[in-house]
Length: 330
Length: 273
Image 1 (cartoon, rainbow over the protein chains, first blue to last red):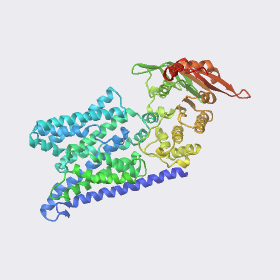
Image 2 (image 1 turned 60 degrees about the horizontal axis):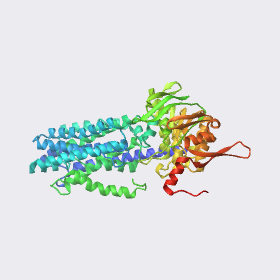
Image 3 (image 1 turned 120 degrees about the vertical axis):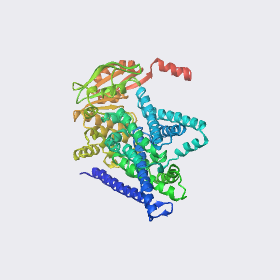
Image 4 (image 1 turned 45 degrees about the horizontal axis):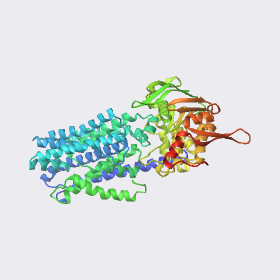
């Protein structure tokens, strides 16, 4: 084997070791999340504490791991199919759709968490259906999809504002609170549903990895390499929307992860999607879980909404990565 | 043989190609010449099967290219687009390895790697193998795109203005490589070009397009003369020959009437020179 192949394979080995490190990081974050409570880092001792641990803390950490990995993979996928480093799962209006769905449920007085989650999920997914319809009528260029997504986002934001305007003070407060993100709403049943929506598409993402690698060089080059560009792009949008909608339906809007985790992963393992997806998922899982642990301990017994903490912790971390990266912008 | 017959294509009702007949043979370089916007790129995309023609069809060895699966097409024809925009970092090795995408499963095989090695060393890209594509010069990137297409190991190679952003040395290098792919490996090479002289020097066959139709087609000596060049490009040319009369080159004299009028209306009439 000549030297350049050896160099490439050496790089692959380095990536695999990086994945192992990220896995350790995620496990560490999970352990931290399990140990972190209102009294700081401490293991449950009394009967009540043990009961609370199983009933509240464990599902919360599992949900954090799931949501983090789901948003991160969805973000990496939308960046790849839209060929845009600014894309996140929310670029196509999924977050504003989900927020509108939740707001609608609140205004209509439907207080069952399942109904709220179902409404948020349905409206989150409806945004990507609108964008896909646009793609069908016009074309599936990334620019068309992004502009369509931004338009849908404004539409749903305006609709949510309208609901806040007509709602009572109490309802408006509930709508705003939903949009901060909250990992405490879900029990095991909800987690099972979220897990299905986040984990089932994951193998498909890996199956698309080579197609997405080819897409990095442009639509035409990818098509000439045998990639069915239109199909891959639409499939990517559907999968990314499904994962993101599954995440926000139960946890509200946690916006920053989907943008940042794939970039952080890319800085570590490069752009090969066979490594980028697992690395993004582990990064996202670790980040959300650690942020949640911080959210519960910094101001205990108050719990700071997770959507706020991920940004406060994530942005300085991202700036640090951005500054130490030798490349132009990542 | 890659053969287009009666090929017509329109973008949103605006006709671009009109009844094109073209046959690109293995072992030959076919140059597509013609002014900007005359449909050269569209023709290449139709030949590749990326666009569905409004009328006519493209046959590759007798099979309709639109009926082939994308992966089958990719094992038959490789393409170097005019410009490659890269949004995310990628090493030269990874970019060339992408040429093996039509053959790959999850993990590239030894055979894939040895093809990549051969192409990299052949094009002198080995020392750049680990460099990020975004840090390369335009000429180097163009060579990487060509390397990727060669790693695809296809019967046909289609290039869209492969020399447009290159300096003289890189232009010659890329054209020599394309010609060698045809003559040594027997590939059928089709390339859109702007340089009439380069086409005359490297092509076995020239297809002169004008306004989406085929103006003339044949060996460079038959197709290219002062009359056909002026008709198609609207520029009067003169031919200069070397001492032995073997090699000539076309030299533009002046733009045709329309261009001269434009100059006068913008900058004012010029005295006789």
